[in-house]
Image (cartoon, rainbow, N blue to C red):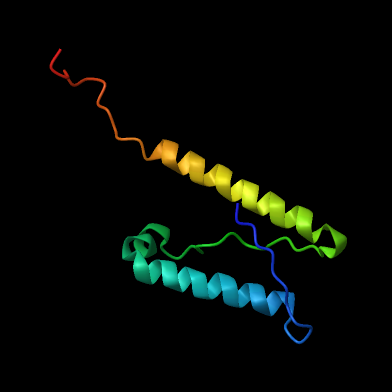
Length: 93
């Protein structure tokens, strides 16, 4: 899941912003990681659609949620980066 808190001026529609964001970021990912282009083939990098809601008075709560989620994701990433240990290898014992 990808969560953004964005403030758009009234002249920019949500749909045009999301189209630009999803299109440009997919191009950047495929440019930086060329193997992804072949993995995805003709399929799209991003899922179809998106969810949008207004924030209003809950902005501080949402910012805090995003920050906490980011900390949680970083902690999970650190766990998954753990060096691979082959269970079938004799480690000198």
